[in-house]
Length: 281
Ligand code: R5P
Image 1 (cartoon, rainbow, N blue to C red):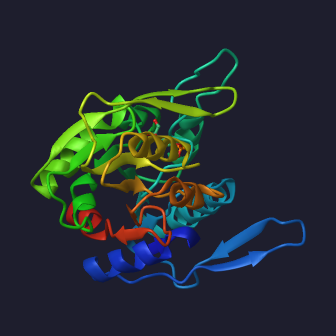
Image 2 (cartoon, rainbow, N blue to C red):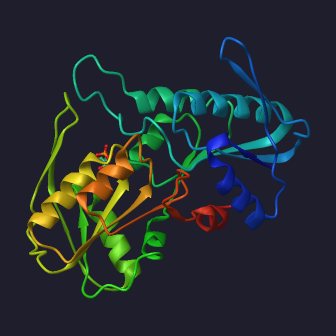
């Protein structure tokens, strides 16, 4: 049985379809104090596959409840984290900070047999789990919605994403890759990017990153590319978080197209990772 988190209902339904497994309809009761309780009346069977992106504090609590009811009613529990929240705080970057990814991983290990995630920010976060942790690579699928571009440049907004840009370029079948040097203030979150080595003037550029969260990174990169007189700028990412006004920031900066996957379900989620997850199972 597939148990969906409330923010991953479309992905869970697509996976249930692909695996030909029943899809649970999760009932939610909310109490006056804001706490909530889940119920799956027909829960039971050999294996529960929970599909739940953890995009907020509430979705973490929801997932813990799904895991708990699954542990009590199924022989095997597999937790699929299409997007794992708090994964970017994978170390204490400054004195006195927690390793939030470790705290979350420990909690999510308590009532599951294994955890599967789609392109986590750093695969090494798997070490924080007390149960086996597998990674699904959906990056090649990012090439699917891109338009026909003449000699595109696949650009990562920082060096950490250059491997991702190469994967998308390889799947697209043409183009060069490069990356910006990115600097982000730990205090303000402000982002600055320095031009890449490759000359982008007159070319179509596809910016590739794992996450678009506030949109600051992509907006800074788009600004920089327009200063360098590119022909067009497209954005693709695995996890289209698009918090607050992020989508508007990209539009205001002059982006020509934006695509992401359904690890985070948004209007830009043009690519489904359901086939990649189904392949895993
Ligand atoms: C950082 O290392 C990530 O790969 C993304 O570049 C970052 O999370 C994007 O964040 P934002 O959209 O807030 O600039």
